Structures are given as structure tokens and as C-alpha cells.
Length: 300
Ligand SMILES: C[S@@+](CC[C@H](N)C(=O)[O-])C[C@H]1O[C@@H](n2cnc3c(N)ncnc32)[C@H](O)[C@@H]1O
Image 1 (spheres, rainbow, N blue to C red):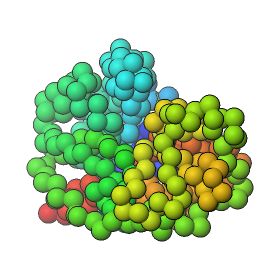
Image 2: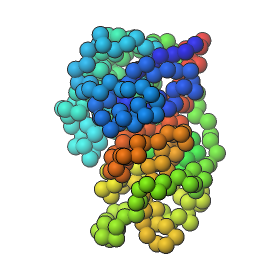
Image 3: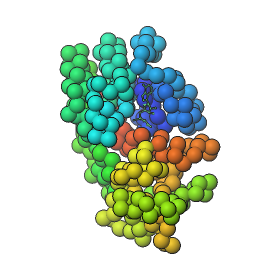
Image 4: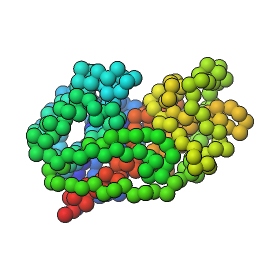
């Protein structure tokens, strides 16, 4: 059976990337970022509804079997000052919680950072879902579980009107970083850090040598939206054979996140824009694993 999904906070469309393999069609996507929406439309041919979700009307949302939500994580992170429910960036998600318990889509998946688990927002969400009759479970997933040596721990909340059991994630064989990124350093960008920036931030940068990419112990740290600005712990840089530091390219990061080789960001996007969008996105393999479990529930 083909399932219909709504993708909220759609960004560059990690959910839309995973969905077709599970016979799921995204019938509408929503995001306020014009950049994200351009990338989404270029790759999926569907134009996301470009608006602030703070006050979207329930009546305007089409019927769907699955709601996927990937709301901003900053209200729950230390860098975002953990203002939680008091953060105005949490308003859209709060509004969508009221929408979901009124509409009651059969399946809901919510993605966020691990710190979300201890937030007041999570308490409120959980209470609302249980009161509305949902079965809820929590899943912690990381690219390493899918064989990719990269840190990107994420929390997923799964809520279904029918009981569900998530299968144990498969123990995936290790994939070499060198093979994942091979041939994906696109030439349209100058990926090298200028020496001044490299010297200034040297102490806080996480760097791997290109020779170490085939080493099974080498692990990349999470690429975040602050990668281009070289913020502390914002993503790994690569020391090339000649000793210079370069960023991982957008295409390399897409591959590390599990996007298909045919996915590409529009050519006119600058590197800071690309990294902002990629830093916000989600591991496609993690979504795929969850969808596989949920589609099995729907098929019963
Ligand atoms: C964590 S990112 C989700 C990224 C997405 N899952 C992907 O695959 O790339 C959050 C997204 O929500 C969007 N967003 C944040 N606040 C919003 C709001 N109030 N209304 C609509 N979109 C919003 C941002 O533009 C961003 O793309």
C-alpha cells in the first residue's frame, strides 16, 4: 500500500530522500527557508510550502498517513541557551503538537538532538500524544550504527495509533570514509581554508589527515550549520597531502549523510549556505531504518 506523508521543517529533504524506497509519497513539505526550498524542489520536483509554521491552519494540511517533523533543535542545546518552551523558535513545534493531536495522523516521527529528551517540550509532547491515544517509543540512532564512522547522534520519537515494535538496527559493516567520499570534492568551490583562518582557529579545529581516511579508527565529528565559520566542534576538516586544510565538500557531506549520488544542491549556492543547510539535515539511513519498521506495522 502506498502511504502519504507530510514533511514538516523539510530543509533539504532527508525524509523525501528515504521515503520512495518504502513506497511512501511526500504529498506536501513545509519550510520557511527559501534556500532549503530551492534545493528541495530541484531534487524532488515538489515545491515546499514556504511559510512560517507558527500559525499554519490545520485545515490547510492535506490528509496523510505519516507526519514527519524535524523541528529546530536550538531551543534544547547548550549553544542555543536551552530556553526550551520559552524560546520563540519552539513556537512552531508547539503549534504543530496541537495540530497533530487534533488531526491524529496514524504515524508520527519526530527528529531532534539527544538533549530534547530531557526538555520540557518533550514532556509536553509525550503527555499530549499519550492522551490522544498514541503508542510512543524513543530511538537513539547514529551513523556509526549504519557503518559510517561519523558522529551525529540523534533522537527519534515514534508515535503510532496501532502498537509498533521497532526492529533492532542491523549491525552494518564498516564503510571506509575514503570510499564514501571518493571523487566527490567538486571543483566549483574553493574548499581550502585561508592560512590566516587556519592559524587563528587551529586549537579548536578537528582535523583528519587524508591518509587516515582509510583507517577504521578514524571518526568524523558532526558537521553542523557553523562549519564554514569554523566554530568549535562544528565539523571535521581534512589535511591534504600538501599539508593544507580544506573543508569537506557539500557533495562529500551529502554522501556521508546517505543521500543518493544524484542529489545536488543548486550550483549558485555559496559554501556558507550549503553548510548551513547540510548541518541542519538528517542521516537518511536512520530515517530509512525507522520507515522500514513502520511500514511493516501498516502492512499488517
Ligand atoms: C533541523 S532543520 C530540519 C532539516 C531537514 N530535516 C532536512 O532534511 O534538511 C529545521 C528546519 O526548520 C525550518 N524552520 C525553522 N523554524 C521554522 C518555522 N517557524 N516555520 C517553518 N520552518 C521553520 C528551518 O528553515 C530548517 O530548514
